[in-house]
Image 1 (tube, protein in one colour):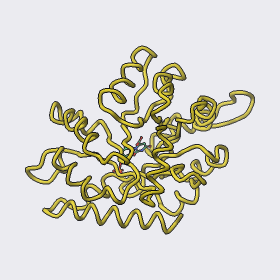
Image 2 (image 1 turned 60 degrees about the horizontal axis):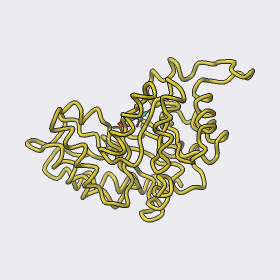
Image 3 (image 1 turned 30 degrees about the vertical axis):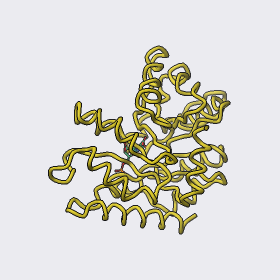
Length: 267
Ligand code: OMP
């Protein structure tokens, strides 16, 4: 099954466009709990409220062998109908990128991955060629430094456009398999709405609400589209670290429920 069909099905089934970020920062885990056990409890408590999970590799890699093992095992423990996104922001020369894609999709078993467009088409090709998997290309990210390059104007093709607009245009051009979406940061809704006007059907993964301050109503208004899975909104810390106490998993469930409801009230 194609990734975006799986995502659409899941959004319809759970009536949620909330993607939960499983970013198990070791310094914030409840006392005495390893990443795998933490993730298991969070997933059990929150899966009914989300359309997808996104695992940021940094937090697993930083924990060494235990983290890498938890990365693979966590993908396996997520219930079958829920798409799992590898937030690895990969890309390299084609030969190396092929190994990255194989590690993420074949060895680890992810449904989709975030990728970085800076090295151009051949660096993303091994990901794009996987018809059965999805990719989200970084377009306009949520961090302050996004402006350093992404907002610069160029006169490519005779028209004055920002680099992030060119990335969006290229992503659309490369999307003959229908397996490409964009990462659009929640902290910049003008840019989100600009790209939504240019690409009404392109799926967006939008991180940056909650801990980074992205405003929910503005994100939904700027990014909405008619496909069920065409706009998914990620939140990590606000949900998984809602509490560090003994009832952390029920606090996470409550945070997920409340964010899902908040998003749905804006849709
Ligand atoms: P919270 O700020 O805790 O909700 O986490 C946001 C997650 O989304 C982290 O895993 C970030 O690495 C990721 N992210 C952004 O915050 N901003 C972006 O522009 C892109 C991503 C991403 O690719 O997911």
